[in-house]
Length: 252
Image (tube, rainbow, N blue to C red; front, side, top):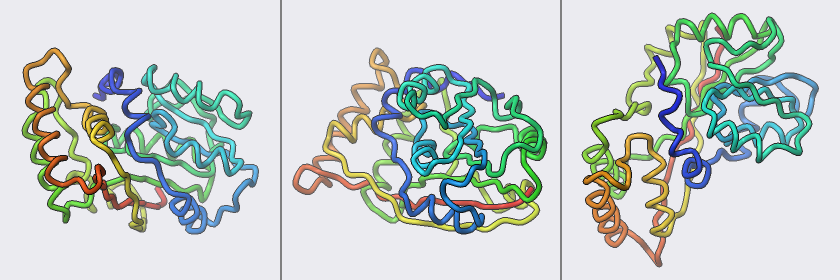
């Protein structure tokens, strides 16, 4: 069962420090799904969070139903998109969206699929999708070839709070899961990156849902470890987070 409040105290940091998605990512999805920008179709962004991917869809003129059960994250998106007439905020779970049957042409799930009950969500996606509608899953996965990223992950996964375990989506979202969920699918990888000064790197670290809180003893230890890592790897006061944006496009 998903703890929908696990990001409640991280929502602002998530919005500020987590990566967005490139315009090339959206263009690749639209091309593969044979969708023309700005056509009058309904897109569901499920587990939409603070609207990282929602932004791209809205700016291309699509009508978006952003389904997000976490109040803090949903509120950030509602404030950010309050002047978009094509934005619809839905306070529901992925497994029970309350969207109309056969009403959605494209389902987007950005950085959230690994939290879902996959059997229930598959039934819900089938219910709301139009015939020939597609499902697209996305993640920004850190490039682990980098020594900086290798040492960074060693720090954050060794010092995470014992109260909330990390989900390790990068390791757990496997072909076996995709084969069970889709009737057919395709995986595409595109480059993405973020550049941080130390404050940005520290903010990015605290945006993880398994990080210790300020009053916990691990907090200072984590801060010192991240500062030492930054001092070791920064160039001209910056470090680069390199990602591969993994896109999974399929039919269910």
